[in-house]
Image 1 (cartoon, rainbow, N blue to C red):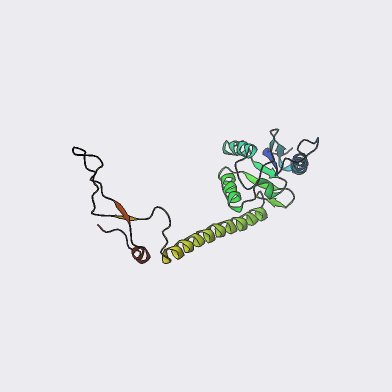
Image 2 (tube, helix red, strand yellow):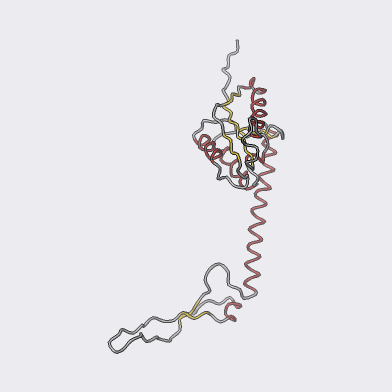
Length: 210
């Protein structure tokens, strides 16, 4: 008899199919994914892994966005700390975006949830899986920084060409006043006109005067 009580590991399976094609069949791609994930969970029964009964299946939805009903339902359970491991058939079933993947992994990590891809030997419950995860997240961070640098360079190039970016063209107040329409007794329009700054000012990076 063992002295220690084995910890129960609650596992949730997430499946996704990009198109609705053949979703009306008796056995679909979603079923095949779930079958493989369930078999993997059974293989880890000695470690205390147990399959949760709830299904999280997104059929006919792209992996480019996180706006998926089943995925959002899964994340609600993750935030409620009712899941210990999220199991998928392949990483791209969860998301095709590296940035979104990094966001999800950060959420999982904040709630002590591990992530497993059964066909790619990706398992963050192991040290090697966590190493692989850190490499992927490093690439995600690199991607975000490169995008930021490209945006900064594009803005700088546009300014050098005298192009205004990031909002309406700046303007300066003219001293002209405009008479109100109509005859005597009508109030005058005492507002000042807004005149675009000369192009030379824009190219020089000057702003409107006081």
